[in-house]
Image 1 (spheres, rainbow, N blue to C red):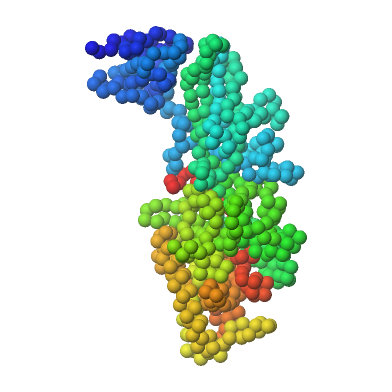
Image 2 (spheres, one colour; image 1 turned 135 degrees about the vertical axis):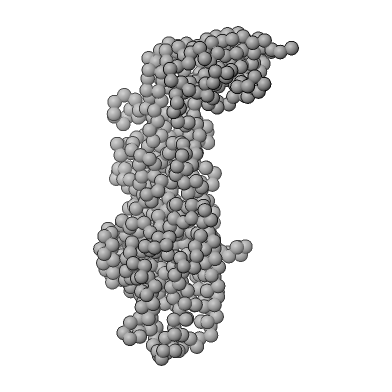
Length: 631
């Protein structure tokens, strides 16, 4: 025996009520009140109902809010799952849509055709007297603060009397509440009227009733970046509840959801335009170095900021302390400095002097255990945009140094690696850098812009290329030419002496094998060929099984557009020219690059660092929008 059906005609003006007997079905006439211009519909029911949309009489499909075309043969059927516990405790809602439909805000999807809202972490400090980041406070503090928040408009259209028996509630899950804060803009423009209504310790908020045609303005503030335990998605829900009497609990009639994705922190590669250079004034005089960096900044048209001794407290390694990146939403973008967990003399500088109006701050520090040299951000780099076997990485890929697979030696701390992986738009590549005494990727690689091919070249330090060059010069009769000629308190080493050193050859073979291991990884993971790589002559020596540069490490350079600040190597002088400088110029100047060699020998090199280690660069963001990629 088939279930008998009654017909109910829906109305766009007022709700209809009907009693349904368990075991029977109700046919809902969706055609009698179709609004002008409507081309599709969806239908939703409360949990006590089964709702079916029938296109073919032989096939009944359960509806889960899918949008259906308004075909003349389409039919909606409703049946009870069980007896009701109260009058009107089950509801059915039919919604009609025009030919373009409405944006589906209940999901978030990647790519140029993707959908979904974007939320910024409000991690800047828009007032100099505010103390902490703006999102540390449960209130809106200024117009500039408000601009960092995402706008959310809630429109209510319907009979004014509906709120006699219904109420509208915004609500959020306990997990998501820790990631956002929602403010309700009420009254005039005074910031005291921006009430914190949702998020943190507030899980629900009842929206005030209107005359039936109201608009409520909310602003949503991000509190947390994507991380290992947070995918970056936050859902805000609006539910219409019916309370037919004071003695019965309210029952949900309809729920709508908007999904936000928190904007990731994005790194910037050397190929992007430089805006500002940061460098430290040293306790041991580095004035000559500062003057050279200043001259290079002027050539590149960059602002130069010198961190004074009182702020750096004798710590000149500003590259190791922090990494510049940015966040972006359709309505706003601003730079964000990532503060490393190394916590040496510069540990207060990013928060105290970089954090400010439209300049955000983020950090990650392990709760337990010690950090190592690999946790400094000289061990953090980013490639330019690449395509690998058809897969596009329009924002490049992060590079971090680690230990040899399975060795159990030094690695970047998990909390930092988890953060980098969680951003998703620049998938990290882990390289082998633990063979170096300091252990940073910037000791053996860098990227420079180029006008042809992929728009960049990967530069790799190469002992093999250096020994080849020195052998050529020896065969030409310059075996007595020496490294470090004219440097006070540094012993000169002739080419004949160097090339006769068996230990140096042993060290060079080992170091070259370590770099070649990384070369293979980079070619595979960045889609590079040998023509995309330039070998920069460089020698290393081993001490206690780890390597340091024999002479200033030329790949550890400052890249400012076409202007390169390269550590001066003090190589053998032949025909009045340093043969190492001459070789590097011959490799890079055909790419349209200008090479400036900077003396950092006593101010940085003998302290186990070079030009890149002692500088940091704020760059323009990508023109590509991160939400248009597909991780």
